[in-house]
Structures are given as structure tokens and as C-alpha cells.
Image (cartoon, rainbow over all chains, first blue to last red; front, side, top):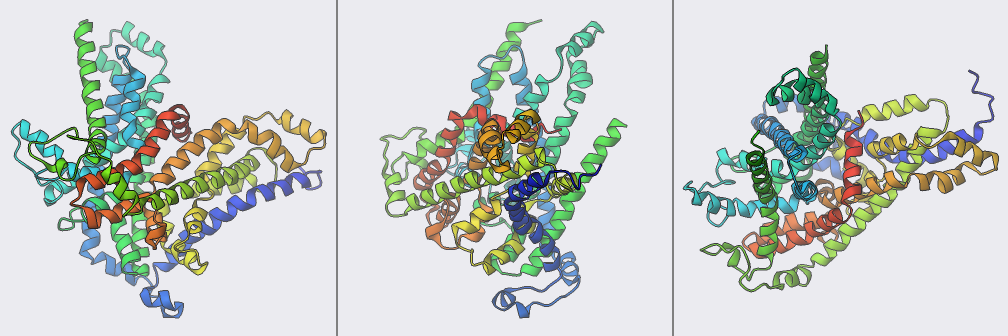
Length: 300
Length: 273
């Protein structure tokens, strides 16, 4: 194929013009900073370097060895994994349940219910985090008032280190399940009815049909949602920022993303913060690869 | 089969789910209309005794949240318009124009898509600082002016445009950029609408990047302004709820009005496998 001398120069030139602005933005404001993050993590860039770049020195892996001994990093990683490993499956599970209800032939007013279930997803996280802050208030909050009806004693949702994470996870599930639900509904609609008919002819019950047909046919949706939810949840930040005064009580809701923000933009330890960013990135990458591997093995 | 019982149970579950989904939003609106102190009263009230717009007035007069509203509107509109333009240019080029290295370049971009954006934030801030863009709207808009996901989605859609249409225009002597403007752009309308709504809503809701870049409170977007209000006015439940309504209601209404296109937009991203 000799594309060299073909009269395509117009096309090539047009491609260059059309691509240049977009690629420039992505290259300059995304790809370049990612590379620079790695370099930054190997320096002691701090507030003095912010004033004069000459004050930044190359320190090798010192930020990482310091991080390994930083109890706050380990606490933040534990909290982050808690959020991902409990919040992720819960979000996807609730979404699947809602999708199954809405997909049922018995259900009426499907469009209305779908809209209602989906509404929390489009809301502004900061605003609803503030709303939930009040709903979680130990004395005046709606949740405790509701629980009092069934005789549950008041819980200090955001003030008790044991309850703060569950409270934040509850908000995340409430806000995010609608998105996964929509994708599950699309997945359910794509399953051919003939598969169920064949299954029924073979005498399969409802549970068997669900396990042998519905779940396997939804596997691509599960994989996609698993990866998207994991990546998103690993970065959780606004909830503790707004609800628990930046990671309280006793660091029970300090996320790794929040720790990075504090070091980078509050205390200007940007080298150290970049090292945290690199660690978070490696964790997310590992989780993504792991999910692809599991899916591949399941198919093999 | 006991159809009636199953139907009843199913709808019971749906109604309970709907109440849980709506209750926080309904309470937010109700509390924002209550006179000061009523949201925390005993016995609890679910509806305002006499609805008042006092807190909204305070937001706009004393707390100047109208300015934050305008900032949010400006930033979200600018990002939506500019990113649609740049993404559609690049997406079309990747889909239809032949140039050396096209597929390798696109493959490289796709690989970079899995990198979460917060990883880039620290150097990005330093870069914007050296360009003098910290505490400017441009500093919020520029990094979002083109996205790999947007280019990818538009490319998928643009591949469906018949080649004949483009070559016919070329035969008639139309320039490449004219073809993009006159033929391609109108055909991309469905995907641009869907992507545009999703982009607008998600940038309206964005928190962390405006929080980092906008240091002057007169430039705060609504979420950032709201988060800083919590610090001083946490005790003022009704006022905070009014602020939350002001932030959430525009996107909620926009979603209700353009629901079909919005859902199309988010499933575009989800069904790419």
C-alpha cells in the first residue's frame, strides 16, 4: 500500500487541523501532568519550591519510604478499601434489585419509577452530602427520628468512628445506584426471551433461570460496572470533605484522595502528595487488572 | 402462580424504593421553606408551618450566591460548548479521515483513558499557575476542553456516516473543513445532544477541580460556595437547605426535561463493549 503519493494531502492536512486543538488540550492538561506526577513524586517540592523552583530537590524514593511508615496513609487506605469493597457491591446489588423489579412484566408505571430511582444520580454530590449531614444529625436528623419509631436508640452517625463510614456509604449507594440500574435494565432488555422459554421447557424454576441465564448474560454489564464503580469509589473525596470536617471522627473517614488533597493543596507538600497520587493510581490499576483477569478466567 | 400477591409485593417494593430515593430531596425542599429553627423542632415537622422564601433572599442578598450561580452557569456552559466542538473535530478525524499513524494514535489515547484524572491534578495546578490561570475561569474550563471519552464516543457515532456522502461532497469541490461543518456536524447532532447534556450536568456538579483552582470566593462555583458556607452556617439548617436546593434544582429540572437524551448519553458510555 503506497499511501505516500496518493492525493490525500488535503485529508491529512484537514486531520491535522481538526485534531490539533483536542490533542493539544489532552496532551498539555492530562498526559503531560500524569508524567510530571511521577517526577514530582521523586522530589521534595513544598511551599518553598512553590515560591522558587530552585528549592525543589530530587530525593529519589524517599517520599515513598516515608509514606510506608506514615500511619495516616495506611488508615486512609483502609478507609478507602472499606468504601470500595462495601459500597461498590452494595451499589451494584441495589441497582440489580431495582432493575429486576422494573424489568418484571408485572410492574406498572415503569417510566415513573425509573425516573424517581434515577433522580439522586443527577444531583450535586456536595449539596446532597450537606442534606445527609442534617439527616444524620443525632438529635434532629430525620434518620434517627425514623429509627426511634421502631425503637432504635439514637446513633451519632457522623460522630461515631464506627458509624461514620457506613453513613457515607449509605449516601453513596443512595446517590449512585440509579446509574448502574439503567445499565442493568439495558442489559436485561438485551437478553432474548427465547432463552427463558427454552429454559422453562427444560423445567427450570425461577431461581435456576436467574442463575443460569440472567446472571451470565449480564456478565459484561457486571464487568463494566465493577470497573467503573471501583475506579470512581477509590477516588472518594467530597463526602468526607463536606460531611465529617475533612476525614473525622478520629480519621475514620479520611480517604486516600482526601489525604492527597490535604498534603498537596492545604500544606503544599506537593512532592509527598504526588507520591500518594502514585500509590492511589497503582491501587486502582491493580484493581482494574484484577477484575479483567477474573472475568477472563471465568470465561476460560 | 399467585399473580396478585406477587404484583402487590413488587409494587410495595417499588413504592418503598421511591420513597427512599425521594425523601432526602423532598425534605431538602420542605426545610428550605421553613422559618428559622423549624427544621429542628420537636415534634418534627415535615411541611413548613408557613412557607417562606426568606432564606433564598438571604442567599442572594447577604451571601451573594447569585454570583456563584452565574459562575457555575458560565463554567458548565463553556466546558460543554468547547468540549463538544473539540471532541467532535477530533472524533470525526479519527473516524473518517485517513492519515498515517491514525490507529496507533487512537489506541494510545484509549489506553490513557483508564488513568483517573486526580493523578494529574498536582502538576496540572503547577502548570496552570505558571500560565497565570489559577483563580480564573479559564483554569477550570481549559483542562476539560477536550476529553478522551468524548472523542471516543463521537468517533463511534461518526463511523456510521456513509463514506459516499463525504466523497460526493469532495467531488463537488467542498473543502475538508466545510465538509466537517456542513455535513458531518449536523449528522452528529444526536450524539452531540446526548453528550452535551451529560457534560453540562457533570461539570455543574463538579467539586474538586474548581475547589483547587478558584481561590477567590467571588469566583466560586455553587458546590464550592456551598461547601464553604457549611463552615460558617452549619447551625442554620433552613439556610443550608435553600443553598442545596439552589444547586440541585437546576440540574434536576434539566434532567427531567431532557431525560431521554440524558439516559442515551450515559448509556453511550456504558454499552461500548
